[in-house]
Amino acid sequence: MKNQNGITLIALIITIIVMLILVAVTVTTAVQSGLFNKAGEATQGWKEKENDELHLDEKITSNGATGINAIVNQYTNAQETESNS
Image (cartoon, rainbow, N blue to C red):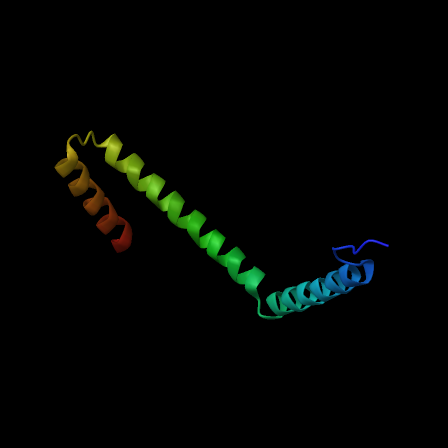
């Protein structure tokens, strides 16, 4: 018989079992640490900030600001107004 190279079926099964154990431990740790909840909160916060930025941009463009200095001034004033209210 020839000398055959490669992995055996048993080695493949053992590798798959080890990988499944690692996945189970990782998912359990992620769920128990609240990783998914924190990711959801971060996403919600990002969406709120994005909406705030869109509202500020609308205020700037509605005031007819042109040129970079005028836009920066309008943006700064709009942010100050939002933080004061």
